[in-house]
Amino acid sequence: MKTSSYNFQDIPTDWEVIPCGYFFKEKSIKNNVGEINLSVYRDYGVIPKDSRDDNHNRVSEDISNYKLVDKGDFVLNKMKCWMGSLGVSNYRGIVSPSYTVLEPKKEIHNKYFHYLLRSEEYRQIYESFSYGVRIGQWELRFHDFKVIPALYPKIKEQELISKYLDKKT
Image 1 (cartoon, rainbow, N blue to C red):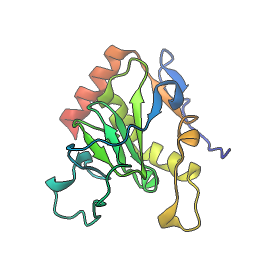
Image 2 (image 1 turned 90 degrees about the vertical axis):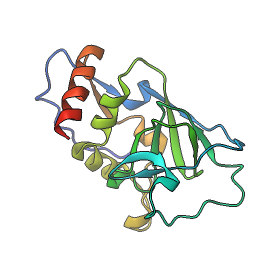
Image 3 (image 1 turned 60 degrees about the vertical axis):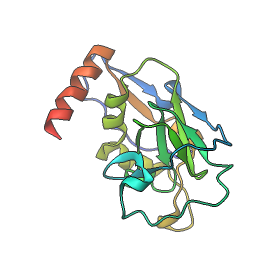
Image 4 (image 1 turned 45 degrees about the vertical axis):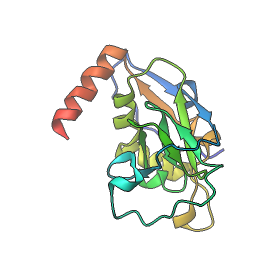
């Protein structure tokens, strides 16, 4: 397992530091005909693929292996997670089999985790945990993602942080 150094000493004392695997489980529900295609953008998170004209990735003719995403699920582009291509989905749809779909399994405020896990500090952690032959093909596997520590304040504080960030970004 790869390791990385984390600088979490300046966090409030009532926050917990808990591995991401505590909060998420991998989900892989396939054969979902009639769902919209979603894509993960570094700048926008999870959005409908046809909502932008700059995504030139083609949807396969055979979508039987595409994975179902429900509202509130997290989607990681495992080959570009180290670049920040991940986020919470506000849509139900399907994604390429090369994406990782994560379903929250504990009480979290999704928008807080969306901001947290897309931050520059976490992008650097993903980079240190990603494997591959070439930089453009590095991959962050779920078994590595789930050991990455998440900063976990109380739910009410997660809501306040995400509201603040909504206004500032």
